[in-house]
Image 1 (tube, helix red, strand yellow):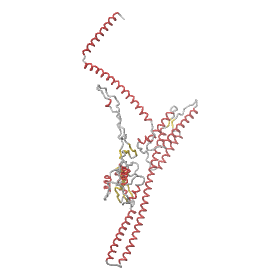
Image 2 (cartoon, helix red, strand yellow):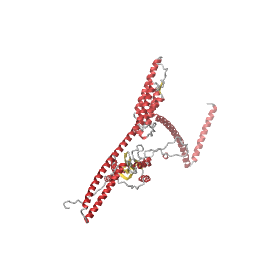
Image 3 (cartoon, one colour):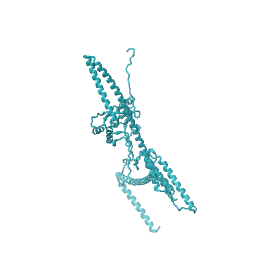
Image 4 (cartoon, one colour):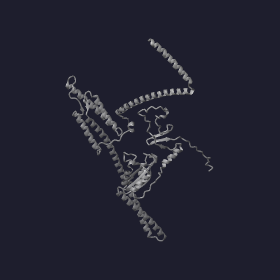
Length: 510
């Protein structure tokens, strides 16, 4: 330290003492309110600094989140979901590639594709491989090693494809396709050092085989449904023929009976007169009227037998089984159409069907087809056309019937649903209130997190003003629900029915 530094040190100390004294003097001049304002200003500065540090931490967390999301997206692209429960929740409609006429055509095409695969393997064109590879300085050993590896990669790929193609269904077609492609890519990577890979044309044949096998199974199912429909029509035709024969036999027998009665009556009338003759004349008129009715019935029977398209179009519902505004629109050629309705309400549904309209038409199939076309986009089952249930209102059905049918038709607006309503009353009497159907909300709505941090402002932000929690579902967790394939039903609280009895009466006194 130099001589001049000593004087500087003394000067610094004197300056410090002077400034400290001035500071103490100024502090003594401050009022309590001014001291509070100073402390508040210092606290604000500290909080702003803390706020900036928090925003920096949040920015780091968002950056890390974005990085994790990118990694997750990459993993999802490689992940192939094969769990049925997850596949049922999210699957795309399959668009047929070939649209062949029948299952035999699909079988022939599958045989052709498999024969092409065998030909490619036989011609060594199913995979790419080097021809000048040496092993232990031997070209022959190198060729044998390459041939063994080619055989191994093709065998592994064929086994993988055979295993997954047998499991292909409507909900996992795309997953199986991705699995076949990924299997090919993985095998190519494992054999990259040997420069061996599966040919894209061979992979394409495997994908063609998968599409053909799936569409073959679909076509087989369609043919089974068509055969089932034909058998059902044949059974209906046989039942109709039996009904016609029995009705004709019964009418002829009744006609013969009335003719014999009329013949005896006419013989008896020849020997009577006066009041007795008048009585017999009235009786003969009644018999002749009965014979005229029977003649009309026989004509109707002959007409139904000759006209194969005459029948009844029925509109029925079953609110106890399917709910309101669900109607079945079908056709029957039975002489008694209610027999067909009774068959539909068998043990497969809990309640019988209610008839809203029974329309006789000379061309029943045309009327039925017109109704089905009008509500084609309102079908309950959009895949199987044989399921003739539609989600419409009775007024809409009545409007279409009027446009396609020129005769008067009576519609029963309110269904009886006798057993269903009685069941509801019994359930209520047992303390089980009627089940109320509710539609659950299954979509969780989350608050989207911003990808960028908003600019820092001097204003303070309360943490409670930022809502990052998902919205709650419409189902109350404090209540019990009955989950069925038709929906979710709220189970009401039980209540008791208090019953009081009057005075008992002795039967002996009565």
